[in-house]
Length: 112
Length: 117
Image (cartoon, rainbow over all chains, first blue to last red; front, side, top):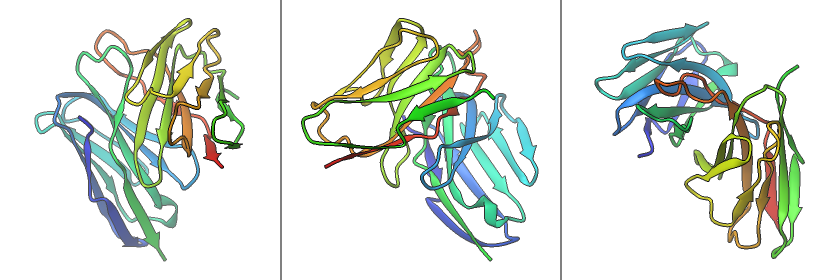
C-alpha cells in the first residue's frame, strides 16, 4: 500500500539533473511532493491533482501519470540547496479522510 | 504568521513514563495528524483528527493516545505501552478533503525528537 520511491539515494554534482519516481499499487487521486532537510520538518513542494498534470517550481517540476499510477519529480541543473530527502505522499480516489500515504523517501546529495 | 508549532523540540523520557507532545496550529485547519519518523524511513501515521472531538487510529496507534478538545490543539501522549518510542515526531494539519478527494496538502510543524533513556 505504501508507494515505492526510486532510486533510494542519488549523488549529483551541481548542475546535473535527477529524476525521482513514485509508484503506487492503488489508483491515485493526488500526489504530493515534499523535501526534508535533516532534523527538520518536511517542506511542501507541489501537488498534482489530475492525471497527466505537470507542475513546476523554479527548476523543479513533476508529472503525474494516472494510468501508470506513477509520479516523477524532475530536478534540473541541481543546486546545493536541493540536497535532502524527497518524499511523495499519495491519496487514493474516494479517500475521505485526508490521509496521505508516504513513500520511504529518496535521499539526494548535491556536491560542489 | 500562521503556522504549526510543536514543543518541546527535544524530549527525554525514562522507561515507564508517559510523555505528552504538544501541537498547536493557527491555520484554521480542521484536520490534524501525527506521524512518527525513524532514521532513514518515511512517515508513518499514528493518529489523525478531521474535526474537534473526533479522531481515528492510523497505522501505528498502539502505545499512543490523543485528544482533540480544541480546533487548534492536538496533543499526543506516548504511553509506557509503546515499546520503542525513540523517534522524531511530526504534527501536520490540512484543510479536509473535498467531495472529490484530497486536494490540499498537509503542512508540518518543526517536530519533536523523543529519546528514551
